Image (cartoon, rainbow, N blue to C red):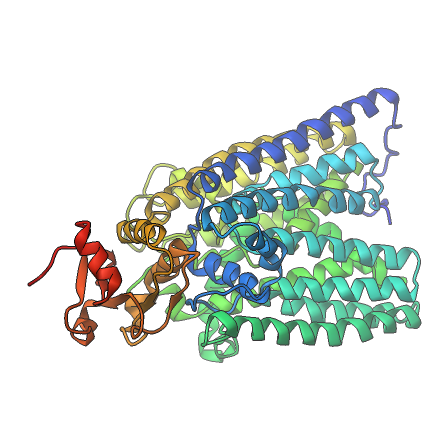
Length: 604
């Protein structure tokens, strides 16, 4: 499937000479180097620290994979994140019991998976008429975007998820090239595996099913093979993931609990805010190119449907709108946008859920730009950019809590402009300018349309437009990854810390093998769950498994409110785990040994 005159200029493309071949070969190496450098640069801090930063999501995910392989695991707090990404690295636990070593290996594997995604992205690009060097160039540019590189700092599902989504689209293309039952089965398996990576990809299942139903008009046998594979495997994936979740979190699966509630008519204004904010985040995250890709994909999808056949453009569009709609529903609620106790900027411009599909649109845009885009495509992209940026800057930004709490992993693409954020939440009603406290919104919007400016100025010369636009985007992506890494580093400074008590307990546990530790599950829930601190504490004590009981253990982790339930003679260590959580050494051989070596002081 190649881009034709509907998305390319009327004049024929320049011939692919040996000179241009060398240019694109150099471009491919440069883009691949920038993508690899961006991921390695970002991952440095995760490697140096050696333990999770984003404790609520990361520890939940990693513990699920550990439990899936039968490795003893503590019960933690979480939302029931699906386990495939952590199962991939869970066998490392069979080689080491040290959580610091495990996390570093997981980080390296994540970077490898991210960079390996360049290959299927490039194979997709060749189907749009690009040569291999051109295809590798645009694929590497996509992987250099901050929305992708920032995830190198976290052991989340994003990297395997994007790889599997990309492989699914490539499988759909191959199915269209030669519709066979085997290729239909492969597509169904990949979709189910993508869903097993993260619950938000549930919307990808019906999108793929609808695509197969349309594809059945062309070859019903292949489509049927895909459907009878896709539907039962996806159901089984969901059931298995939920079962694994309960192994580490008795509360089980909790993601998306309020999505249907957010569909209520009275919530329309919140959905509008979330939808606009997330559209803006994708505008700046893809440096405007997602809109070019959206226009091109619409043209290609219309052509596919006109020919009574579903192609990759239809699948990408279905997936994009499904993920974007699901994300808007998840965050378009008053308790998310206007939370009274914990104001968050990332809830207003959440990008992580829709990122994978939108980055496929960026790939389509880059392919079209290399081939040459029409004036109408550029004009349509500009109209969409203005339709998103203008109301965001003038209406949404003055309402949003700019400067409030952010988790970089949630809005990685927008973190390229982290340096423009204020240090404190802004006063409502301030329209952004280039110099005031709300400047983040305007500066990001203006920077993001720079590739569209270059494209509009050089459109009449296809080769120049392609190389220059790619050069601009790659430069912005590289610089953006550096700035985004600073945001992630700042987040790590405040979240990626070893509790002094955890450090002391690790010493005690190393010197006294067989020591048992438990926590009081009756402590108030907010005390345990605040900021994932409980998860972080559990992780830092591995390989010791902290049980959910305080009887029959050597050390009990108890909140101050429950201290009166401690056995007579229990002695508290000086340091707190976090907040009002303390460790008590119960009477017994361990307490006697710690009193003898001076670690504990008698209270009598």
